[in-house]
Length: 340
Image 1: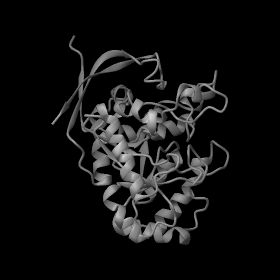
Image 2: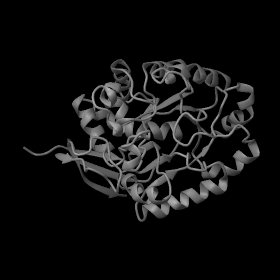
Image 3: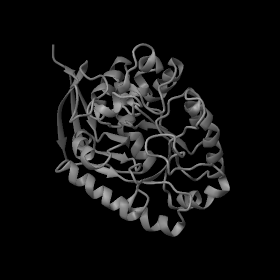
Image 4: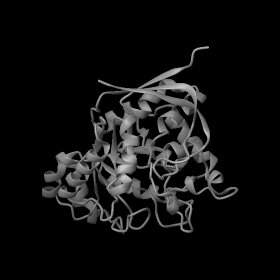
């Protein structure tokens, strides 16, 4: 019986961590090989917060990926004092600006410590006028399972105050966030692979699984079900964002385990299997590329990725980084990549 081949055109990862230095060179090619482009997170140390830093970081990414055809869609680390003149000067170098609540996740200490609308108004109104999307890591510092749901009220406040601002709720994990999509025209969302598959029980229900620990932390089965419903239907306001976040093995398998799940090399294979299992393969293209193109108004590089239904054992590590489900067998393998 012939194997099943699935073709994906210009897949996009709308939330990706590439890090810097040695880690950048170790893992950037894993995304650049199969994805046409990705929204690159700016939370380096120090964060990417100037035009010069954006340009320099993009140059380092292009050097790290070599000859791969891949567009790094760059972002700035949001600061309330960004003014219109500055934003106009950097507009052509970025695709979005990323807002982090202060100290809520990896390298976010310089983020926003309060969400006073009037304090944020000059920057966010200028972004609205310049059509620069705002990507947000939406968590409070409350009880860990409630942090995202508590942040929904802040999303609502921002959506109401800045109706022309395109707001991307990053890596949503809750039913509450899914429901917010329907209440505000200018709210959109990215969803990760791992939050479509795991719940908190997979992370800590038995022996602790450090390579599944991430922020926002995986939630309840009913939350996962809400995410699956909109992702599998390729709801026009949601798109794939891996939040693939590499850390060296010693930082994950340690006291004080670093938050982040590394999925970049296996995301397309596992999403194909997931959508096939739910009889939703016809919607995978929109979730992986079509919706993002419309939401962000981008035209990605031509890239055709072929996946074959043939068992693939996930490697134990990729250049020192342990991926999700290392050593386990999945149903789809990468067959080839073609460029236009």
